[in-house]
Amino acid sequence: MHDNKACQISGEVSDRNVSLAYGKIVLSPKAAETLLQELIIRKTGQK
Figure 1 (cartoon, rainbow, N blue to C red):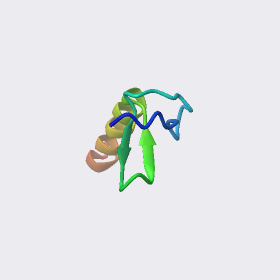
Figure 2 (figure 1 turned 90 degrees about the vertical axis):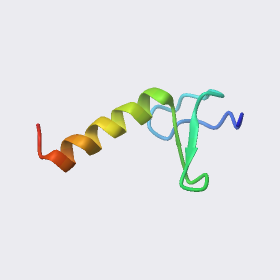
Figure 3 (figure 1 turned 120 degrees about the vertical axis):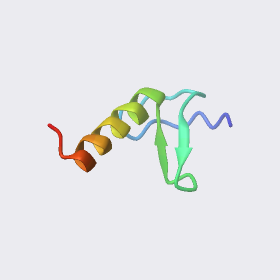
Figure 4 (figure 1 turned 180 degrees about the horizontal axis):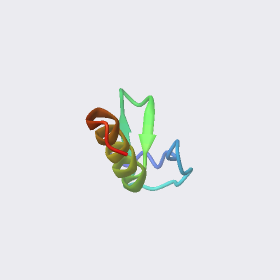
């Protein structure tokens, strides 16, 4: 999928960005990794 939509966190425009939630969320690979890490930390209660 080559949407070239801007990442909603970094603003980066790339064909590597991923579209989630039926196109409602667009993230760069780096932003997606950061979000995943934050979600894991919140779930496990780590800081």
